[in-house]
Length: 141
Image (tube, rainbow, N blue to C red; front, side, top):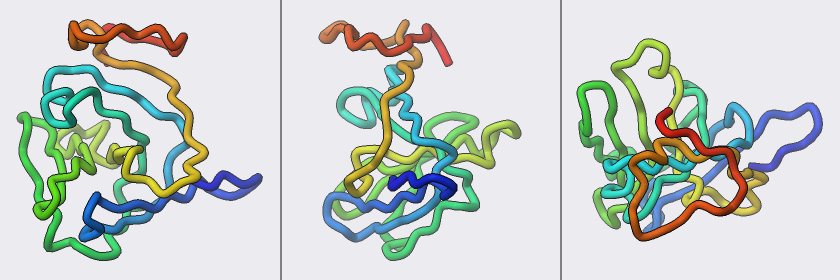
């Protein structure tokens, strides 16, 4: 993300192997860290992401390498079929969320300009770590 005065928050990124390359415009440079059990199992720790309007996310290369896994009745998760990188979380079955997609901050090209703003689903966080960074915490969403 390269925030400039009067310009949108442009992002670009890729998976670990570079097969999936994307770009877009983020809502704002706010990062949410999700500690729910699904996100921890999927990402290996907690999932940190930034919101992008669905229509503003463009897959530049690797659309054929992007696999979608239906992780619940309302959401799907996108990952690279070649390297396994977790890239996207999309609540495509929820009317108030389907127009946005969460993009993995770790997959973004630096400098991101992003900042961790909130921890969500901390009631489900792993018992192997503490949250002591002073960032807002929410028991659920």
